[in-house]
Image 1 (cartoon, helix red, strand yellow):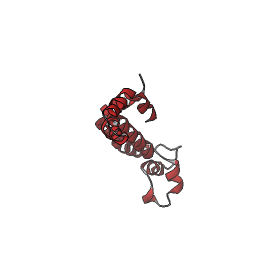
Image 2 (tube, helix red, strand yellow):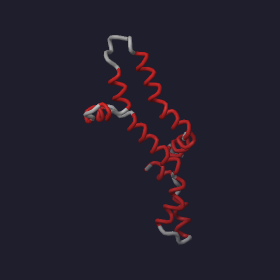
Image 3 (cartoon, helix red, strand yellow):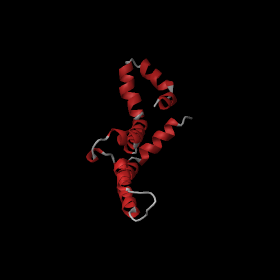
Length: 121
């Protein structure tokens, strides 16, 4: 977000200040609408990192109904040496990845715009 706000031209803020806009008005009316793609990208990346978190839910979850998706997938797998139940694990992994894929497909244009705008000039 800092890189995105650094890439916004200062002339926009200066023009609004010349028009007697307060700092709050400049933020709410100019900067916030410009930052929608970057905020959407940040929100999606935060969701993906929380969705894929494994270690902390593994340590902190005390009951099986408290497991996250990744810990639940790991608990399905019984032993790495045997391959008899690997089909069920792979099918579960495909279904577990569907929400992330759907979110990406829905917000794809925001992600591309947010990454492109934060890359700089």
